[in-house]
Image 1: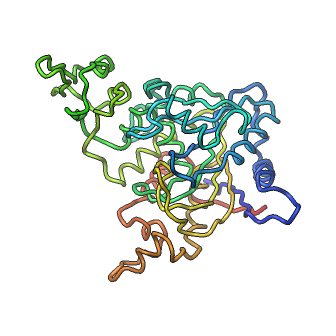
Image 2: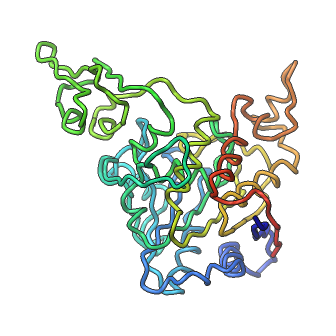
Image 3: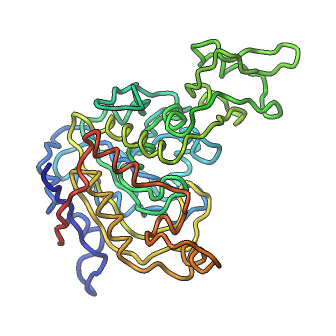
Length: 375
């Protein structure tokens, strides 16, 4: 396979010169985003709106820059994300939208609608076959993502406590999975019901197609039967966070499943990918807090190949010295610390990002070989 082109520019600008959002627009146009036929097409721009309390997520200004380019080429863009598997401020569409608005993502600020792709409770998904997949037969993807004609990912490149880093593939694979899809990637276990939180409303039972949930009339609680297959559909039905899943898959397997989910999203339609290495927090933007950045801001990158983009971003991050006053710096200062000579392993030694990229290449999502074209 030929090397993929990854386009790069830093965040440097001259006084009274080109604003950074305009520089991003010039970058993606130089990379050839205009080769896509946007005319009259629905365009899903997948990004993370940030958990409430977190301030390291991408600013709405970057989203608007991409939206304006899509509209310039005649497209009909919308910003989108799917609901989360865990309790928080983004586990259903109402709270998710309020969170996005509070963090600055409104039609007035970004120039287009914000749509939660898997619906009100995270159950509006579609099963998408994974061509060449080894672990996922059908990926549970938010319906609005798959209804779009064109897919664009806009990713904040940062550390992650399980995946090693969060880049394009994680933004696409994990981010576009419905609540059941996220469970499918994260956990191989069956449902568990917290008896204290369960109200016995039986809404979860209506979502179960396998007889996996049984109502205990005496205690007025739900229980899990031997027929539970761990599909995760009940997760979105519970308004009281009473349902969870155990037996988390190993980080290596998580990465491989994310790669297969990402392929399901982009396969067979025009797609383009953008990553910004800025405010590189040690953990995901899903946290309701964020620690100090672990490295300096590096720049903005884009490509038609999400795998090459992730490889280029990780290489650039590994080429700089981490900040001493950061989680990585603290780790490296501990007595007996084992230096992995790799930023994300030093940040979280238990993580494994290489399995994701290796498997993505194996199933044909892209190539890890790239040519860095500097703007």
